[in-house]
Image (cartoon, rainbow, N blue to C red; front, side):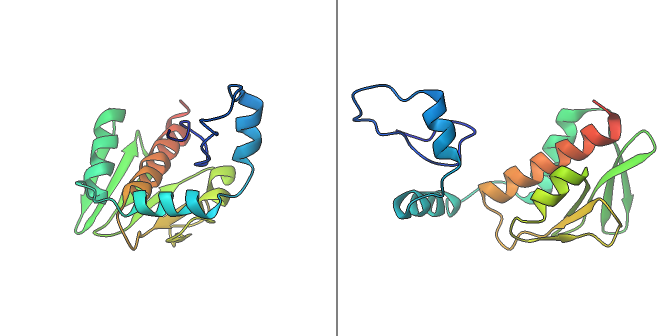
Length: 150
């Protein structure tokens, strides 16, 4: 059995006589992973991906539509209207996030405050695994939503 989508990786007991209700799952989401769950997550993280950071960001930008690409030497900026909301270099993504998302994002691996200023995060993943790609995608989508108001 796999963990429910959106959960933190906890898997309900498949042998339990009663089905697990949502309140129990929500309570599990607040608990740290046990050693077996953490090992399973680490194993999944090491699965090979067939996508690079720039490919994932490009696919997200294509999906969003209406985004201008502004190239300047080795930098590719993404803008909605006149608002640049994300920038991609060879190995780093920078995105403009609201305060709540930014605070959470800065607690994740391979992130730092961006030199672009307040509200910007710099993400330079040491390993491009599915989790790094998922974080990059989420932050680009958040940044676009913030820039467009939708």
